[in-house]
Image (cartoon, rainbow, N blue to C red; front, top):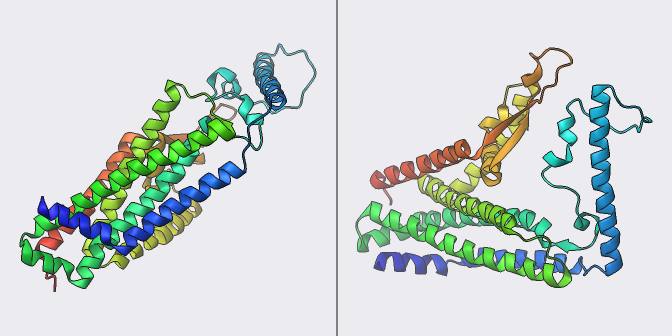
Length: 338
């Protein structure tokens, strides 16, 4: 317990960690201030006009669907409206859409918490992922580079215990900070929606969906923190983690993706880490691949998309992070630290 307390004090006393917390608070403040300045409480006339436009939009969607069905069956007798009609009319069936037009869609300059909470939460998760990765890498990297770990081992000469305490303290601290930041962040925008915008429809489905994204985001933050910690341990320096991240993004996510597109590789998104991160956060992700429909007969309907679900994506993320962490512990156990 004394070791964990000592590690927490070391972590909280690091200037880089304090700087990252300040930047986190600053980013939140700027986002909230920008949202508040760009929003206003809609008047009764604005609301009435928005409701009417939403009703007209829903009626237009239903009319397009009925026209599509009539044309496909050959019973359409009206004038040609010139609107786009897909081969499969279910694509524009209002009943099958994720959401229908609502009044908030036609209120420019009005912040709607129900509509914007999810994108705002994605922004928060992205910042916390970067925060966890950088803090995890700098926390162990600086100690290894400065000799702080050697001094600590003189007090507690058990390498795996010391490294485990450092990792556990890091993950626990990042988790608590992420939870507090999430509550403060969402509460701030909820207040903005109540006072200077629209709260929107905040029913049980909304909160369950938002909670699911938040939970998956917290898992991603912890995995990123552990990955940064592990890479810096393997490289014995914070810059090792930063270099590995930059190299992966440039060489694989950008360079390899471009090459795979040029050679027309099938389902190339499955080997990109960003695809698995997106699938995990959203529950699933859909990707386009024209090769799926090349074997179909001409004129038949084919949806050239394939789906990546959250479970295989989570397994990929766990395997990568677990492998890096296990390698870090194995190397740390036997390596000369001086």
